[in-house]
Image 1 (spheres, rainbow, N blue to C red):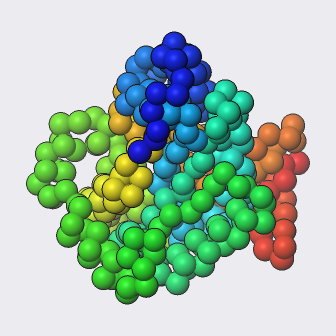
Image 2 (image 1 turned 120 degrees about the vertical axis):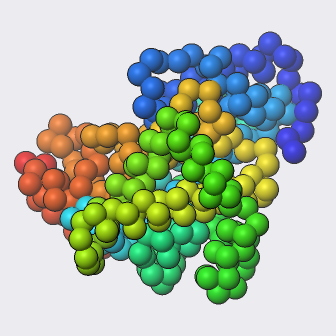
Length: 311
């Protein structure tokens, strides 16, 4: 729990609002209207608690699970320039918070690949390799404000299937509850459709008819959302005071704040479902590998594919 009562209320409120306005520059949402800081009471309250106590602000961000198994989307199984740029952005964001709030901020990357690896068709050893390389990338790049949290921090070296069963049994919402929410809530429906689309696109070893695959992906999408919700509960248990961020679009006023990592053609694109393209003007964008390779040439880094350079 952050310490309390070290700053006057007026200064606390002004500082917390300035920090939230900083986050709003990078808000990932499907809402059309731009909202002010006052429309985010959950985030404002948590930021205020840290500021009032003179403590570093803690952000949690579920994501960075593993690379998509679809070779038309990504360059390989390990983090590349997309992750490097995104992690640097998050570390820089913490630095910017420190200019407003001198105790600074830190970002906990809650890597969730093992939580639903069996549902997305990625082997556990590939997820381990991705997460381990993520830690190496953070350390070697000097991104000192970032850390990685995953199921190993919760359940140690238990078998992956045992960990998944524990997470599901102890924290996942009931299927009927989730189905009712998806039927009645437009944002839950958008998430369900987005995950179904990803699962369909990433089913590179598809067999049977297209309609049968779509039915299977819809069923697995429920499982992915269940596990994601369960993972969110576990994160909240271990980081109860943190400001909760999300890589998925979030509506204005939601308990989680959607954050955009890099420029992308739609609000759902992430570094682990895409490749990075450096445009001729020096700016970066995320897009499927199949699109990026039409616009630029492949660049290697440390003996591995890294990104595309626009021409």
